[in-house]
Length: 192
Image 1 (cartoon, rainbow, N blue to C red):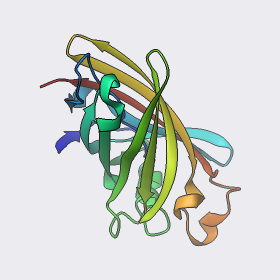
Image 2: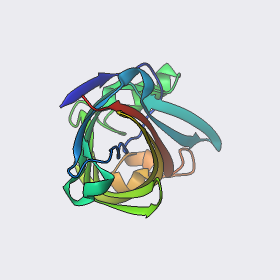
Image 3: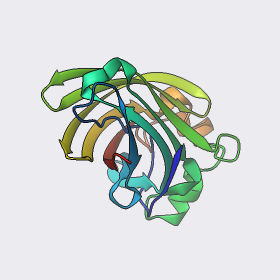
């Protein structure tokens, strides 16, 4: 597994999504993520206003080739405590027991089950996303560009936080903190 430490931006992962890299090989290739150029970001709403965040630390194990989608796989482990929304009070709430409960469930996991090509340079990853020990299937569409040994992928997926038990007690009510969370991934990777 490749560990990647990142600066700051908020949160929800997942998600999401680090999915795709390759070249013209006949078998899936191993890829190493460039930590300085890769991010897992998210957008949520609080009192009707949008806020952004990211997870600054995550590990990614990526094996991918457009020529071998069946042999491709991506697994991402996101360090929940690395969340950064540029608001200390909100960040401390996000890791609390009412939200992600990072003490009990310190990581979120994104693990692909299959890939499909929907157009040249455009793919979909079907994956299991696990947050707070709750697993739901998500579909992550992503764009992929490969130049030589370098790959860049961008994708976005929207999830409902309450599907994963994020927001317990009074926070199950979505009138203050919205249910929908959009997760965006921007990944740069190289073949070793």
